[in-house]
Amino acid sequence: MIHLLFGQDTYRSRQKLKEITKEPFSQKAVSCYRLDAEDTNCATADIAQCLGASSLFSDKKMVVIENFSKLLDPQNLLLKLKSIEDSKDTTVVLWDREIVADTLSKFKNLAAKTQEFKNLTGAQLKNWISEEAKQRGLRLFPAHLERLENIGSDLWAVSNEMDKMLVEGGSYEKPDEFKGTNAFGLGDSFFTSRKQGLNDLLQLSEQGENEFNLFSYLANHCRTVLLVKYYTERKQPVPAGHKIHPFVVKKATASSRNLSFNQLVSKFKNFFEEDFKIKTGQTVPVESITKILLNG
Image (cartoon, rainbow, N blue to C red; front, side):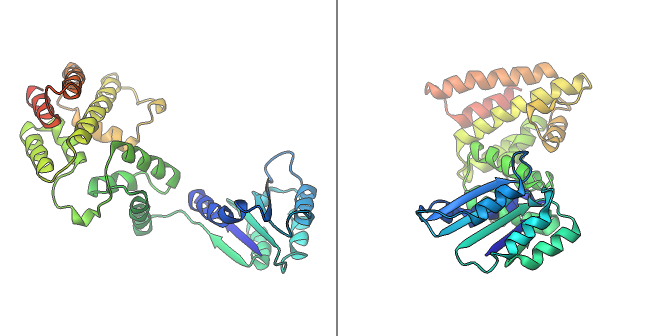
């Protein structure tokens, strides 16, 4: 059997490739080969050798050929694949990003299963984000969705951002099941309005939000806002090395608009002081957050 996977969305195509190869590559009864046509040492002859190779220990084999359309002579690969297309003992998986129409049509006619992965946008992107978050056990509220959707169709970047959210802590809950405020809302009001900040903190506390996670999130967010403020005052872009998404930079800039750099430094120092008190049992997170909020 021949599988053909291609398309701009390499995140989903890689996931599908992993799904197809996971079981065979874990079985000793299957001989497995993996080649990359972009490798300067990889030639059609090497691929042909793998396709025709036999093993003393197994009659079945799987051959994965990545970037196959980049071969100098894909026609020779096509001929070799035609000779084994009906084989029940050989599975071939062809993976690539962009393929010219003429080459694509030839291989599609040969493949038993073909799947194209186009970039997701709009409702499709939103649904994918929600489903991916559910599988990861990640809580998503409207602010989370907005943050992820603003990244766009680069699912590698979206996935990395989800990983960061998981580090911040949380369990999955559908956005429409959550009617109150959320940690991201508190992150905004904490720097812009003491009254709204206290109201958001009270709501989160009543909803049973983990107070330690809230404190950790606000401390990290304060560091981000402080960093963005530093570069904003100097009219410089935030260096890519800090790995802060443009959407987060935009939100942080708005949050710090009415605060001086020194005020933010003071808040950040307060988080260090209160963190020590929490860890030594002198106070609890909600009291520390309230104190920093009112003293700012």
